[in-house]
Structures are given as structure tokens and as C-alpha cells.
Length: 159
Image (cartoon, rainbow, N blue to C red; front, side, top):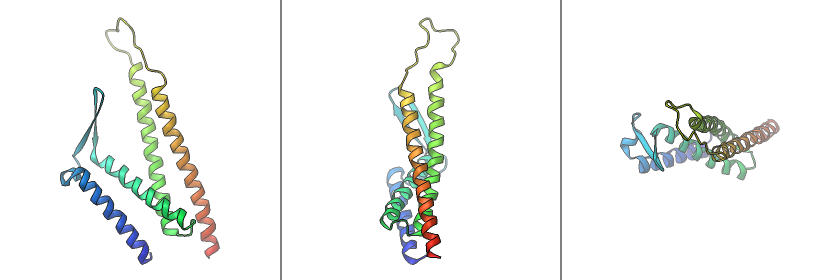
């Protein structure tokens, strides 16, 4: 790895560490630390490690996407880091899609004793989130395919 690539990697990691320490503090780096998110009358408790992994992946994705496009896919190290971050984002969006689908199933569950008015589900809102996440995931897969093809072509021409 070249010296310039090492500086980019160290700069990105130090930026991520600085922002994480600024947001969560030093206590937020413990494995058992959590973040509470309040949406209307529901609390979601998320482990900080998931938020840190998401933020880290997004920063690596963004930095290396800009570097990859600026150099026209000629920088092999930036391309590989971008592809790893892209695959990680695809896996995270797969998890988010399954989470949205499981949250949609909750209003359709059976309750005992049955409610007198019945169960009214909200149509549309959950599916909108599902389709938005699916579209983002499709865009990431297309971007991964294009970057893989361009990297392979440029790497083959360099040899």
C-alpha cells in the first residue's frame, strides 16, 4: 500500500473515531452501552455498536466513493475499500428490510381476548419504507457491479 493510501486510511479512521467520541462519549464505546430512540410513544433501544458500525461503513463508503469517482476507478486500494464498504451496506440494508417487514407483521398479530373493534392495520406506510430500502439496496448492488467491472478492466490493463 502506498504512503498516500495509508494517510487516507488513517485520516478516515481518526475522523470516525473523533466523531464517535463526540457523539457517544468515552462511555459509549463499551459493548453494553445503548442508545434510546423515541418515536411517538415507542422507545427503540439500539446497542451503540450497531450505530458505530453503520456510521463507520457510511463514512468509508462516502470517502472512497468520492476518491474512486475522482480517479475514474484507477485507484485499486480505494476501489477495494469501497467495494467492501458497499457489501457491508448491502448486508445492513438486508437486515433493515427484514426489520421493517417484522414491524409490519406486529399489527396483524392475534390478541387475546379479541378486541371489540377489531385490528386496524395501516396500509402503505410500512410498504413505503420497505420499497425505499429495497430501492437503495438495488442502487448499491448496481454501484458494486459497475465498480467491480471498472476495477477489473483497469487492473487488467495495468498488467
